[in-house]
Image (tube, rainbow, N blue to C red; front, top):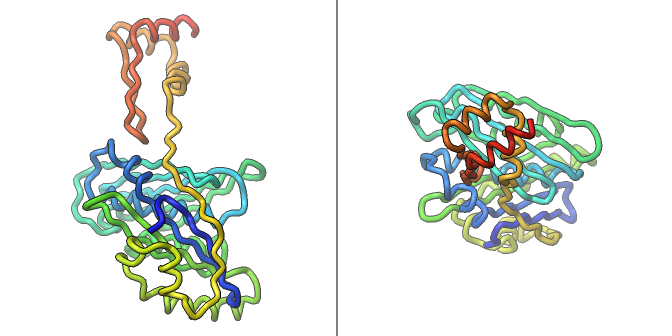
Length: 281
């Protein structure tokens, strides 16, 4: 099994491309300081894999944010990623869980995909949640925004250890009749894939088991990493926006602790720290 890596591949004689994403240690790093219920951890793990796979389909340098917004117990779940396959994620709950399925967790709502390239215009797509899975909603997103038939398989294992993996197949935008026929043939094979196979086997073995009758070109892997990006300096910059009155209140209270919602790291500001910020305002 690959560890924290994205593997792109291409079929030599079929108009279909694919990706495999494996996320293990970095998922552990993202979740270890949070006390999310198990189903919420699984949902975030799926969202991380989906973000990795979606980012890999984009031909740009920049950032992507995928947000689930609903009226269920999970009010908000989001993963931010970039072309370097660096990610961070967070979830916010608004009530007790009443079930473990996708619909029971998120309820009625939307998937919001925001793409911010370093060069060019920012794009945002808003897609109603479809079916009872994240993959069904994402497949609808590709059909709506890209007009490219896409199939996703995402599996997680959060019980003994934190790990997740995903497979994406997508038609190439050429010779659409042949591409769709090729896609349907490969999806039939991919539908036999099990969670155990995808989570436990190396990428090469997964591809051989599924597509041993095809000629598959596998490209160099790209590392996937959890990168929060928080720092005390960034928290200090945020404090400047609060104004003198709020800072003075925190000075009177004897200091301030700020926690990053992504990694749960806490940054302490002493009275002297706060007074220095107050004096600069």
